[in-house]
Length: 448
Image (cartoon, helix red, strand yellow):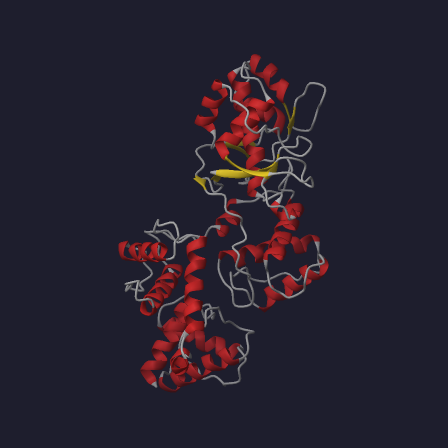
């Protein structure tokens, strides 16, 4: 199954990267038609045309997928300067045969075996100019010799390339969510940061490896971020904001050569982790219970939202309706799917409620999930509160070991958390997210 999405539109810079020039937003299909009509001739054999179209599409998608220019601080996806990218002529007319062909195959691209990123398919005219990739005029000769489309592509890019057909389309959303990642953050984007730091550390050994890619921004992750920021001249705060996010992606792409014809590549398991926060009807598990918890909480404090769903970890019709109601109220795309934008909006809404609670809610608010993950190595007031809850539980439940209330999340606190998780049949990872917090508060309220 394809994990790369074809963007519905891209931003083209009308000049060299550093040149002051306009950026224009263009439908992806129109961009491909424009480039193909600017680069090759409609009279060429069909197999030569298709080989060139797939090459142009793969090069374009590699630029978008790796955020080649955005990781370099630009706000566009590709340029029209042929010294860097592909020919694009604003306002040009399309050749009808090419236009029809692109309409049929716009979501097909080239990949190398064992990798998922679109091939950085370099090419040149082959007439007076040669390069390491595909020769445009050479494809004509091969097609006339009876080569198939895939045969032409393998002639130039190697026998291990193949085609991905019918890739899904989606809006082109920059990978940085707009929400800085820091101690206590959790989710797919934290896993991405941890995975990238671990790979970068192979080339920059001063960066400490993060033992477990858990998706929780812990002390080890913060330490690795700090060293990365020190090495690459960033503001050293241990927080992954926009600048650090894109510098990480830039260095990660570089050490893996993702924008080169021959690269280390991305495997399916690496990419699947990036998209694991997308929840939809039919999904099950702790992530679904988490979104149900947040939505129920928001519904209790927002009179315009009538949300009351079972926190059972099953994304059924009721949960889908609750998501749609939330999306409608907050001006999001109403599709009942919890993607990145919806997830971030839910977290923001939850935290806004916590911040806006009046003074007479002070006692009650101490029972509310603080909005970030707590695990071993954490310290401070919130850990002290957690330990107070656990101590009361331990005094009334022999399955939960006692803990000292010292504000430091050590092995005793972790053992008590795991005991509560086992009591509620939750994943016993010793990390306090919203569902584990809710379980602890449920027992605390029962025993106090």
